[in-house]
Image 1 (tube, rainbow, N blue to C red):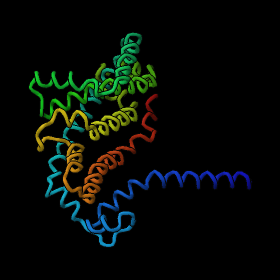
Image 2: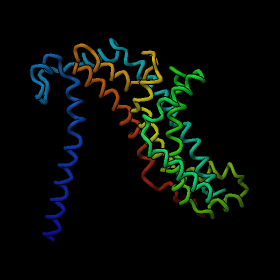
Image 3: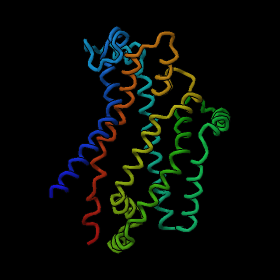
Image 4: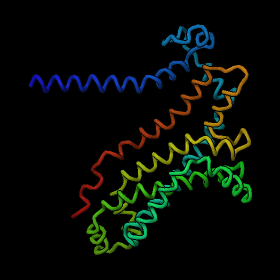
Length: 275
């Protein structure tokens, strides 16, 4: 028992150290965003600020008008998440139930597209968006993000749809449900954790994406928050406090989004499905 307790204590101490090392950079950015400019320059290594201030957030949100960029990022990320999740759920269900052999081969081919770096597709995407007249538009950026998100989302959801017993769907059909009712009322609730994981992946990728937002967006009032932060680094005098506050503004929505839907991941959604 002593050996077991000693091993447990060592494990908890080790995991606590790893967690502290992982959280420390985020905590440093959060605390630094409340420091004054003089405190950042005179005492850059001091952990706690001498004077707490909200000037950095006022500068980012109102002076630099990052609220517009945040709005653009939210619209683009949410649109990409909703559309990608809807399309991939239908596609993954069709792959599993209607043409499994061809569908499995297709999903493997789609995943292989991730072997190529995104920089290779910048010029083709820019040319296509220019011909379609979608350059410097949110719609064009959403379409670009969907081309990357949907293939991987389909591959993810195929594994979740395979776990749904066929007997559950047959029982629903016997009770009088049609194919759409079976899909929406029986299958989707059972694969809800997979849908949540897909939504998290799609939202965070769309929120943090930088390359295509930088190239396809030319107007400052249409750029995303990741591009807006990049503009701070190009200033003649780098305002470290504003930069830290902007980083906090970027990370908080992703964390809140995860906290809002993480309770859907924890199980029990399939209980009582089989009569």
